[in-house]
Length: 200
Image (tube, rainbow, N blue to C red):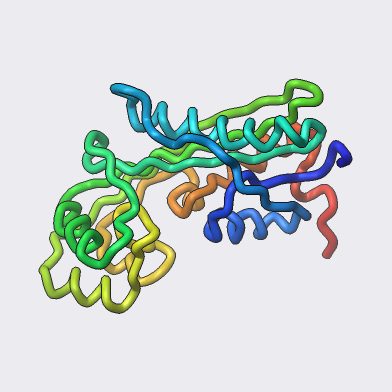
């Protein structure tokens, strides 16, 4: 493949949709990595390590490609890690635990090109503060918009915004799963500026 080939090392539909915003041609390859945390590994460190591992897993067989890896780890009050609920009951439990509290989403992005040793890794944190939620609000939400594949059980880009009090981040796309502001900087540094081929 040529050096300007772009690969997203992720099967996430959310990340694919975000990357599509840049209007760059890319392919998707599923990375094969062990996502289990190391002993006593802080959530932010885990997110960065996995983002790099995902990119590396694909880059090792596509050494001339620019490979993007990303990972997100969510915590309640920045301490207790939480994952994707997977079921309605687990989503209800997550929202009950999050009500009136803050969730911190540690979103990491890595961009690698092994041919010339290009490597960038960064972390973008987003703090999401939930309103005090009545139980009927929680139940109504999970029935209207089942966010079982989202850590925290709420889609900020959808009806989940109604559950929130505030969102604080340097990059609003980080919360959805891929920090595009940081990614654009990394792609430019790699010689693939997103606007270079744009046409009016």
